[in-house]
Image (cartoon, rainbow, N blue to C red; front, side, top):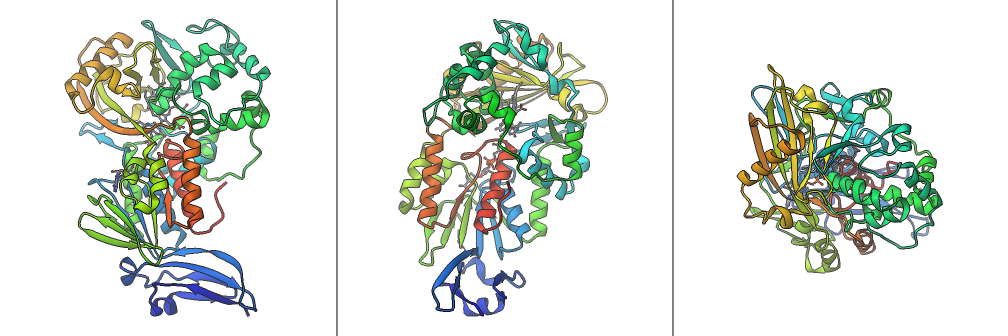
Length: 540
Ligand SMILES: Cc1cc2nc3c(=O)[nH]c(=O)nc-3n(C[C@H](O)[C@H](O)[C@H](O)COP(=O)(O)OP(=O)(O)OC[C@H]3O[C@@H](n4cnc5c(N)ncnc54)[C@H](O)[C@@H]3O)c2cc1C
Ligand SMILES: C=Cc1c2[nH]c(c1C)Cc1[nH]c(c(CCC(=O)O)c1C)Cc1[nH]c(c(C)c1CCC(=O)O)Cc1[nH]c(c(C)c1C=C)C2
């Protein structure tokens, strides 16, 4: 019979006796009655499977006691969700600095039925990360609230660039790439041929602009890629890292020498998740989806789920410090007191974390401080009637045209179900600033909502020919809302992850600051961090 040794420097004996059972070589942590002492007692329990001669032959994994998740945005919520779903963590505590959960997921619902998104509005269903989110949406019982944008919808097919007083539809389909489509001066197929013949890059990292120029040509980089990076990262493709922002493109080039070949041949079939919602998304070829009452519904459903599953939620409780305890756990400092934890999952922005880690984690703090984020002004507008000259998802503005004005989303086209009831209306979201905020908009601490509203309505007038006044306007200034993965980001994250692992620091780093800014990436990376912590088989 094998023997199990427990390393439990700080665990009450009675806790061990009652809560751990030896199941013929498996150790199971029994959740029942796991209350009372864990918040002040710190449990980090390492199971060492030893041979008959008592020598340790295998470290089966670490089973944490109390896990504190810091930050109640979508990343922190997803981490809590997977922790409680695992059933193997006795206590999960979520600490959120503000008075609400959801982070950038923030929707205004008006009395007349309109929904205005101040943060994310469309989630992509495709790929492993997209399917992972759809699975969670189904598990939360939200299927009936999903608003799909199907493949044949204009919001799926039409995206525009605004250049020199004109809206240009981005080419799509075979014919679109074979002919010359303004603002480009030659058919895009030439860019593709260039990629097929270009040499493999040799640099460990490169800006997105440099990569695209090298492989596809400068025109594509200056116009399309510049705009794309503004429409995803609100960032400058000359500063953003290809390897960190678009790892698939980086890997495609490394593996197949050509991006097009790499993308076409793929990375080999990974087993993917399946559900009726996922099948529907595939059958109907959704390009994106939202929720009837806005993306905030997702955070609300998750909060409800966590409450029902016993997660202790502390709002208005910013993490102010982290101190190591002698048992390799944490004292988590909050304004009103402290909590004990065996493990902390940080889902706060990198900068915020850098301010609370102990001096012993200086090598990590140094890297955290280098992960910057940009400020975006989000102006939601509602106009009376159906007033748009074009139909589609929206348009982007390349930085050479206007640094300040990133783009305009035509919300009422993609999601007409979120228009107010009664007479026809048009909802638009104008996004301003990003990496150009200070230079082209002004000091975020000085700029007024009136100034931002004026710039937004002027853009709507100039770009879309809408002269009337909006019947509703909401202005939000989102400070430091989108992290910027600049050159060397992959090395910074690698350094941090390796340092934490090699020094057995019971701290996981998740959130938009590290490995993807999309809602899908945030949820997926939270899940992977939980699975790593619990020694579970990882999602593909
Ligand atoms: C305007 C905008 C539009 C977007 N559009 C899309 C889109 O269409 N599709 C898409 O997929 N993605 C979109 N995104 C990106 C996506 O919404 C975000 O990257 C994602 O929501 C980030 O989630 P997070 O939980 O990692 O971080 P956050 O949402 O920033 O959450 C972090 C949480 O930590 C809390 N916090 C901070 N400091 C502390 C502390 N010391 N202690 C405790 N709590 C603390 C904060 O209050 C916050 O609640 C958009 C983002 C923005 C800003
Ligand atoms: C103009 C500014 C922004 C707009 N959306 C965002 C910003 C900064 C943020 C954002 N948009 C998307 C994502 C998620 C990316 C992902 O990997 O899923 C984020 C963080 C989705 C997105 N929006 C546009 C594109 C090309 C993408 C990428 C995925 C996809 O193809 O759907 C285009 C776009 N975004 C904005 C506008 C006005 C716009 C116009 C066409 C707003």
